[in-house]
Image (cartoon, rainbow, N blue to C red; front, side, top):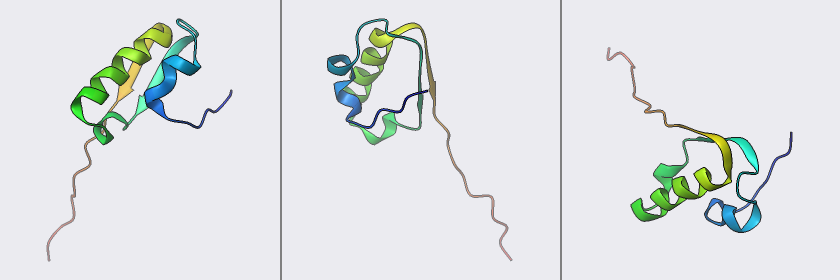
Length: 66
């Protein structure tokens, strides 16, 4: 396994088309403006050979009030 640290908006300039079997993203797109997030999804599908797995969690507070 390798880890890449860099700007996600530049993945198509760094990685070749269809390079990875699966591209996975966790809780990422909400940190971008709408157009940048949509472009990032498109770019991830370009470098993914088979699948794109995007996971977004919504965290809610479940604390009980006393």
